[in-house]
Length: 112
Image 1 (cartoon, rainbow, N blue to C red):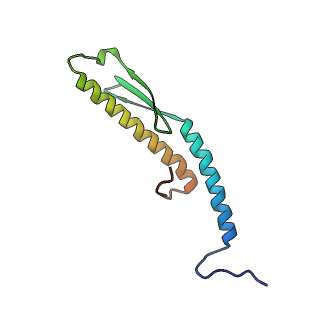
Image 2: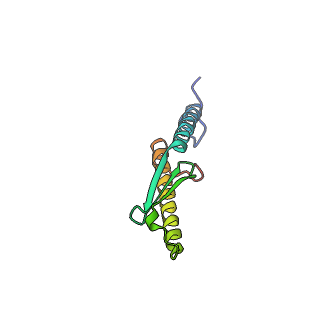
Image 3: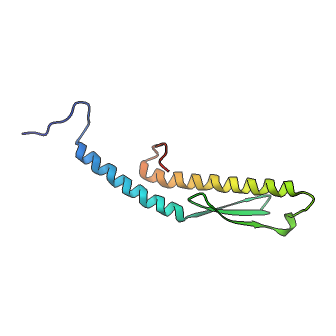
């Protein structure tokens, strides 16, 4: 007897399930690798440098002493926010790029 295919279902469901499971394992491995990576961003011409990891956790902030002006704390705060936001954007971009290698660029909401 030949294999019966379900109407509207392309190919062999068992093979498709195996492919999905393989992709899931690859994604888990890449996600763990991403979490270990670090990205860095600066603001104010290098006055503020921040590092975040792939889990989007802030790891480090470096502030050059010459940017610390007690009369302009607001500028320092703005520079920190700008640097952190840029580092978070870079971490997201890095994660998307790495996962895109597995998913072929498919945008799967809630994937990571």
